[in-house]
Image (cartoon, rainbow, N blue to C red; front, top):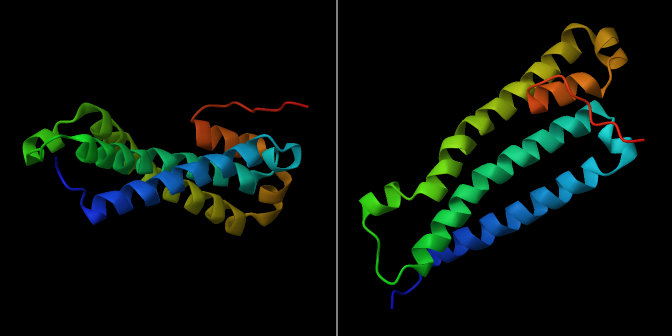
Length: 137
Protein backbone atom coordinates (compact mmCIF):
# COMPACT_ATOMS: atom_id res chain seq x y z
CA UNK A 1 0.00 0.00 0.00
CA UNK A 2 1.24 3.42 -0.89
CA UNK A 3 1.31 6.05 1.80
CA UNK A 4 -0.55 9.21 0.92
CA UNK A 5 1.60 12.25 0.45
CA UNK A 6 0.47 15.21 2.55
CA UNK A 7 0.58 17.45 -0.50
CA UNK A 8 -1.74 15.14 -2.46
CA UNK A 9 -4.20 15.01 0.42
CA UNK A 10 -4.08 18.77 0.74
CA UNK A 11 -4.61 19.15 -3.01
CA UNK A 12 -7.71 16.95 -2.87
CA UNK A 13 -9.08 18.91 0.07
CA UNK A 14 -8.44 22.37 -1.32
CA UNK A 15 -9.51 21.50 -4.88
CA UNK A 16 -12.62 19.73 -3.67
CA UNK A 17 -13.55 22.64 -1.43
CA UNK A 18 -12.96 25.11 -4.26
CA UNK A 19 -15.12 23.10 -6.68
CA UNK A 20 -17.98 22.87 -4.16
CA UNK A 21 -17.84 26.58 -3.28
CA UNK A 22 -17.57 27.67 -6.93
CA UNK A 23 -20.51 25.54 -8.02
CA UNK A 24 -22.59 26.68 -5.03
CA UNK A 25 -21.94 30.35 -5.76
CA UNK A 26 -22.54 29.92 -9.49
CA UNK A 27 -25.81 28.11 -8.79
CA UNK A 28 -26.95 30.76 -6.32
CA UNK A 29 -26.24 33.55 -8.79
CA UNK A 30 -27.69 31.66 -11.76
CA UNK A 31 -30.98 30.83 -10.04
CA UNK A 32 -31.49 34.30 -8.55
CA UNK A 33 -33.66 36.50 -10.79
CA UNK A 34 -32.02 39.76 -9.77
CA UNK A 35 -28.45 38.46 -9.98
CA UNK A 36 -28.93 36.66 -13.30
CA UNK A 37 -29.73 39.87 -15.14
CA UNK A 38 -26.85 41.87 -13.64
CA UNK A 39 -23.89 42.01 -16.00
CA UNK A 40 -21.28 41.83 -13.23
CA UNK A 41 -22.75 38.67 -11.73
CA UNK A 42 -22.86 36.99 -15.13
CA UNK A 43 -19.12 37.57 -15.49
CA UNK A 44 -18.58 36.18 -12.00
CA UNK A 45 -20.53 33.03 -12.93
CA UNK A 46 -18.36 32.59 -16.01
CA UNK A 47 -15.19 33.00 -13.97
CA UNK A 48 -16.44 30.56 -11.32
CA UNK A 49 -17.22 27.90 -13.93
CA UNK A 50 -13.83 28.34 -15.59
CA UNK A 51 -12.10 28.09 -12.20
CA UNK A 52 -14.09 24.95 -11.39
CA UNK A 53 -12.95 23.25 -14.60
CA UNK A 54 -9.35 24.21 -13.81
CA UNK A 55 -9.60 22.81 -10.26
CA UNK A 56 -11.20 19.56 -11.44
CA UNK A 57 -7.90 18.73 -13.14
CA UNK A 58 -6.02 18.88 -9.85
CA UNK A 59 -8.79 17.09 -7.97
CA UNK A 60 -9.01 14.11 -10.34
CA UNK A 61 -5.25 13.91 -10.79
CA UNK A 62 -4.68 13.72 -7.04
CA UNK A 63 -7.48 11.19 -6.53
CA UNK A 64 -5.97 8.95 -9.21
CA UNK A 65 -2.56 9.16 -7.51
CA UNK A 66 -3.98 8.41 -4.07
CA UNK A 67 -6.10 5.50 -5.32
CA UNK A 68 -3.19 3.85 -7.14
CA UNK A 69 -1.82 0.70 -5.52
CA UNK A 70 1.71 1.60 -6.49
CA UNK A 71 3.40 4.85 -7.29
CA UNK A 72 2.67 5.82 -10.91
CA UNK A 73 5.55 6.78 -13.13
CA UNK A 74 5.89 10.28 -14.55
CA UNK A 75 4.87 9.00 -17.96
CA UNK A 76 1.66 7.41 -16.70
CA UNK A 77 0.81 10.61 -14.80
CA UNK A 78 1.26 12.60 -17.97
CA UNK A 79 -0.97 10.44 -20.14
CA UNK A 80 -3.96 9.98 -17.84
CA UNK A 81 -6.77 10.97 -20.16
CA UNK A 82 -9.38 12.30 -17.77
CA UNK A 83 -7.28 14.75 -15.69
CA UNK A 84 -5.35 15.83 -18.79
CA UNK A 85 -8.61 16.78 -20.49
CA UNK A 86 -9.36 19.22 -17.67
CA UNK A 87 -5.80 20.60 -17.72
CA UNK A 88 -5.99 21.16 -21.50
CA UNK A 89 -9.40 22.83 -21.27
CA UNK A 90 -8.91 24.63 -17.94
CA UNK A 91 -5.61 26.39 -18.56
CA UNK A 92 -6.79 28.52 -21.52
CA UNK A 93 -10.10 29.18 -19.75
CA UNK A 94 -8.28 30.92 -16.91
CA UNK A 95 -6.66 33.27 -19.41
CA UNK A 96 -9.97 33.72 -21.21
CA UNK A 97 -11.69 34.74 -17.98
CA UNK A 98 -8.99 37.33 -17.30
CA UNK A 99 -9.36 38.75 -20.82
CA UNK A 100 -13.16 38.75 -20.50
CA UNK A 101 -13.09 40.73 -17.26
CA UNK A 102 -10.42 43.08 -18.65
CA UNK A 103 -12.55 43.80 -21.74
CA UNK A 104 -15.59 44.40 -19.57
CA UNK A 105 -13.67 46.93 -17.46
CA UNK A 106 -12.17 48.51 -20.59
CA UNK A 107 -15.59 49.15 -22.12
CA UNK A 108 -16.87 50.46 -18.79
CA UNK A 109 -14.08 53.04 -18.72
CA UNK A 110 -14.12 54.00 -22.42
CA UNK A 111 -17.86 54.62 -22.70
CA UNK A 112 -19.57 54.51 -19.31
CA UNK A 113 -22.96 55.77 -20.52
CA UNK A 114 -23.22 53.11 -23.21
CA UNK A 115 -21.90 50.46 -20.82
CA UNK A 116 -24.50 51.11 -18.14
CA UNK A 117 -27.34 51.21 -20.68
CA UNK A 118 -26.45 47.74 -21.93
CA UNK A 119 -27.99 44.72 -20.28
CA UNK A 120 -26.77 41.24 -19.44
CA UNK A 121 -27.16 39.95 -23.02
CA UNK A 122 -23.63 41.03 -23.92
CA UNK A 123 -22.24 39.42 -20.78
CA UNK A 124 -24.02 36.11 -21.46
CA UNK A 125 -22.78 36.12 -25.05
CA UNK A 126 -19.23 36.70 -23.79
CA UNK A 127 -19.43 33.92 -21.21
CA UNK A 128 -21.13 31.35 -23.45
CA UNK A 129 -19.48 32.36 -26.69
CA UNK A 130 -22.71 32.93 -28.59
CA UNK A 131 -25.60 35.34 -28.58
CA UNK A 132 -27.83 33.77 -25.99
CA UNK A 133 -29.68 35.06 -22.97
CA UNK A 134 -31.00 32.87 -20.24
CA UNK A 135 -34.01 34.86 -19.19
CA UNK A 136 -36.50 32.89 -17.18
CA UNK A 137 -39.16 35.15 -15.77
